[in-house]
Amino acid sequence: MQTKTGRHKGRTAGLALGLLLIAALALAAQAFAAPARTVLVMGDSLSAAYGLSVEQGWVALLAKRLSETRPGWRVVNASVSGETTGGGRARFAHALEEHAPAIVILELGANDALRGLPMEQAQANLQAMIEAARARGTRVLLAGIEVPPNYGPDYADAFRAMYARLAQAKGVAFLPFLLEPIATDLSQFQSDTIHPTAEAQPALLDHVWRTLAPMLE
Image (cartoon, rainbow, N blue to C red; front, side, top):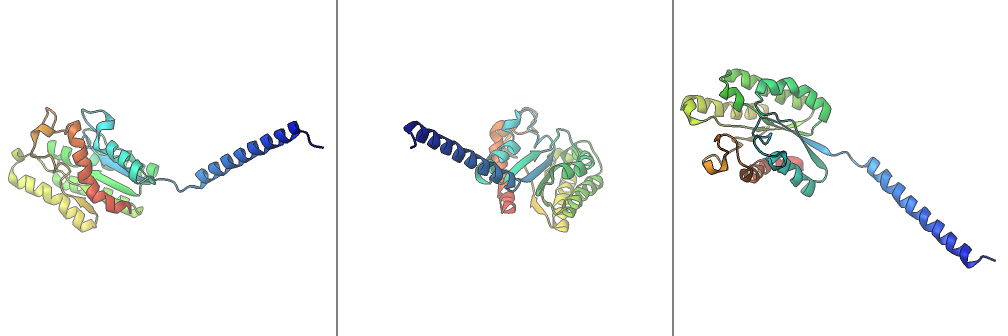
């Protein structure tokens, strides 16, 4: 005859076994879950949150939005302040290998112009990165930048056209001007009049998102 104490111990053991089974199933589901797909951002100070805390930058805000609305995606920010297209190209193969991104956002070229580097060199570097990404099946969003007006209209027009020409020739998603939503409002820039403030970052995110969101489907 089973005692009351025996029946209680049996129920306790059964409950513990059930909880262990549930935990094991949860761990198994986690182990077999599809790995998160990666958006890799290769940019310069405009994407590296120069003068701000990292959490304030548009790339960090993108990561937050993805975690809330696209849980199967993550963001890796490989942007470096002061980066040129040549520097980005030198790091690109390793970044592709390490992170295996599904999408790359290329935001480079401004520092080439600021340093007076040949435009043809910048175009060749961007083209090489686009081709390397596409060779791996990685989709590309090319984010253009415009130079200050003191560079002269001819150079500014040629610099702007470089991005459009590349995007069309390579068939990649294209954002003509990253800073377009804030470009004419100096209050949206830090004291150097080059880098956006923290308050401007959500507008940049929304601007990028309009082109990026369809690529996430």
